[in-house]
Length: 233
Image (cartoon, rainbow, N blue to C red; front, side, top):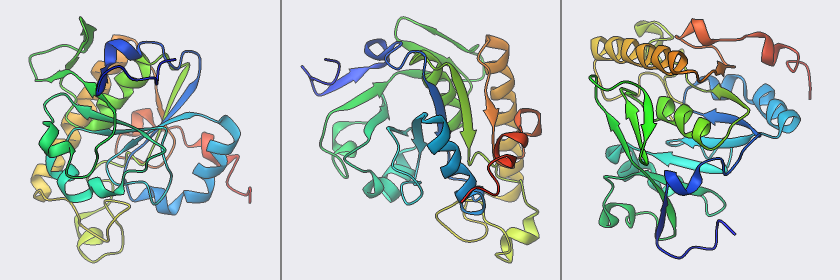
């Protein structure tokens, strides 16, 4: 059995096609998770997808897999992980850092995240310029054998206007109120462009995906997916 561990961690190579033929839902930490909570949960009930969580989102849903690539986010929010999830860490996470919040077995994700690298996978290493764990998770789902890939809560940093966020009328993240990112507004704009570029490269590589909640990345947003579930209790 795959989850009978012979060592502390497994790698992406160990996980190729481990969930072959199943739909996947990547759950980011965007503020739209709150607004569309009922519809997303109805979607999960209907599709029964394998779920990959990004950062602090376990108050919304306990994911099958939980991916962490940002060390600062892990230090701040790592205590949110649930023992029911299979935890995935970027391969540069040291044991001392991981052990701050987690001491179990995990999956080590080796990847190169640099602008000069094209999206791909070879010899156990994922390559590309992903910018966020959400984009990397698309490739992880693909390598795990996903039949379809859906994404919720990948809003982008600038889906809402700066004033709306500063006044707390809208939220960047599901775990906070208003403008909760640690970057300036200009940096947020730049990050959104980098994320869009990453999505485009992933699509060109041949991996198709749909975002099911409102997002800055409109090219990949399919509003019809949740509409049919809008009135479901």
